[in-house]
Length: 90
Image (cartoon, rainbow, N blue to C red; front, side, top):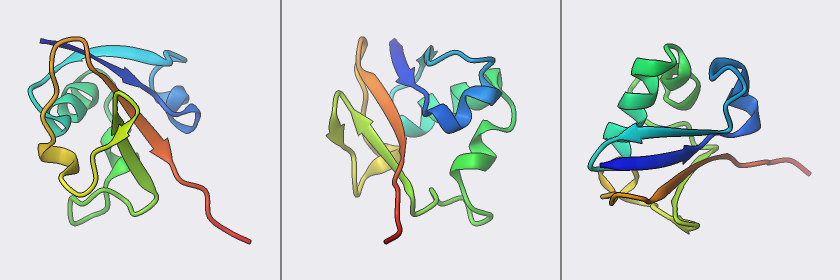
């Protein structure tokens, strides 16, 4: 099953500039594992030391948030996963 992952600009240095990467997976977590296999070091930018997504990371499937299921959220062939870094401040 092929899923497209839209890479946030903060991570493009890890993907060689690729903005969209096709991966395999049945859920968001498997897709992120596939990304890590191709681009080592990417997951360390997304997850904390306890293996949880950083609080400033949002995952969307076809422009809809996956929160709170995030990593277990199922994906289908042709879906687009988007990794966003949420801005904060005042």
